[in-house]
Image (cartoon, rainbow, N blue to C red; front, top):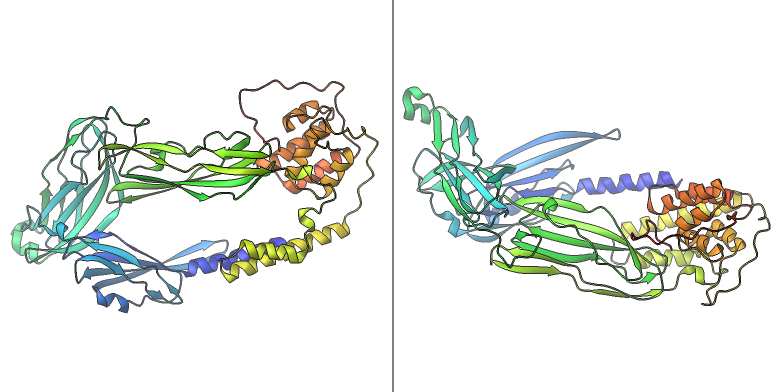
Amino acid sequence: MLRLASVALLILCSGVAFAQPRAWLDRDRIGPGETVTLNIETTDRGVPDYAPLQRDFSASGHTSRKSFDIANGRVTTRSLYAVALRPRRDGMLTVPALRVGAGMTSALTLTVDASLGAAPARSGDDVFIESEADDDDPYVQQSVGWVVRLYSRAPLVSGHLDQPAPDGASLQRVGDDAQYSRDLGGRRYYVIERRFQLVPERSGTLTMPGATFSGRGAGGFFDDLFGDRGGALAATARPRFLQVRGIPANAPQPWLPLRGLSLRYVATPSSLQAGAAATLTIEAVADGAQAAQLPPLQLPPIDGVQVFADPPQSDDSTRGGRPRTRVTRSFALVPTRAGEVELAGLRMGWWDVARGAARTAELPPMRWTVAAGTLDADADSPAVGQAPAGELAGRVASATTGASRGWVLAALLFAALWLFTLVWALQHRSRPAPAADGPATPPPAADGRVRMSAADLGRLLERGDLSDIAAALPRLAEPPLPDLDAVIAALDDDAQRDAVGALQRARWGDGDGTAARAQLRRAFASGIRWRAAVPTAKASPLPPLYPPG
């Protein structure tokens, strides 16, 4: 029943997500007299309402196309609309949100920069090429945006535009070509704009070869102009020279030349509890590098806390031919003791290529007071799964404050289904066989901490969570063992060792928690079988693979 409800909710959520149209511009900065293409993608049957654009733009060149996606037996129709926008004024303009069927696009920002309106040196020719870099004196290994623009008096029927790679640098094409029109000296030009990422590999003078074009223009105008050439066109750009600077002596290491770098906490735990995992997520945003060029996001060591890092998630994009990346990484914090713990602020040094100075991105330190683990509490305290339905619903409602009403109802539905399944399982399962006589419950240790008995373990296997079970097993040994790896080494029964291994995989790997719990119940139903002499674990220079709590 739970699985069916989950699938139904996912389908509903997917339908809501697909219904929202997506809008983007092929460029976010243009010069006066240029056009920009607004693209709108939607799965709704409606068409965009372009009326709100008339205030600041003149729209032309409306086009559309449809595509079909098949996933899980469902066919989704996706429509892409494009319209050419010519701004009516300079400055920072807002492309308003547009209605598409039942959905709305997001508003976009476009900058019309008057400084970009200067005519190229060869304007007036029927076809010519303009090339430029976003930085004429970059640093070695700095990512430079390189743009090539082909201007033509008439639409092109065919052709080949090529930018040769320079010696001493890597050149990689990024993004799709942008096509727009521009007025120069009273003439209308059709423009094809192609962008590259240029990375100098050594200091000194870097020579950029001129881009070349050969092709054919539309008939009529070019036929009359060139006679028997039949509209054949060719153009070559002038070579450009960049002065590449070396790595400064005071630059941070590793060398990281960027235009911007920021760090922030995406999610931080409000509290920590010994033996329980909490999630901390960090985000890095870099202007001028791809994710592979950034040093890995790693937390400094935290005394009294084990840290388990998830694989980083990255989102690479380009802006003006220059790469931008957003990297997020989550960490599971598992305190090993109660008390005060502190996370030192993460620091990452980089070189500001715009200011020519060393800079540091950093996060503030974090401090927590770790509460004692749940195993130190009274064994008769109610388990999480036995919380009253009203209390559980209150927790769900509190946790979703500020969320949409639909998500609140979905969370309550899942909570009710979960409680129903738990009650059903408790009513239909058979009672476990009484545990065989095992070792007597050890007395409290000198530190006052209560040791776990076999009976406590039996109750825990019935209603406790996997982290509580993992913390209890080492306490059953005399003297207590440091972690689950030591428990496996001390057990004298293959089935029990396999069951503890399944517990470890279920907690930190890809194991099945339900199957692991059932395997533990079977293996430990008649008590724990320790070896005659419990081996002493040798100290390891590496941190344990799984947390002791």
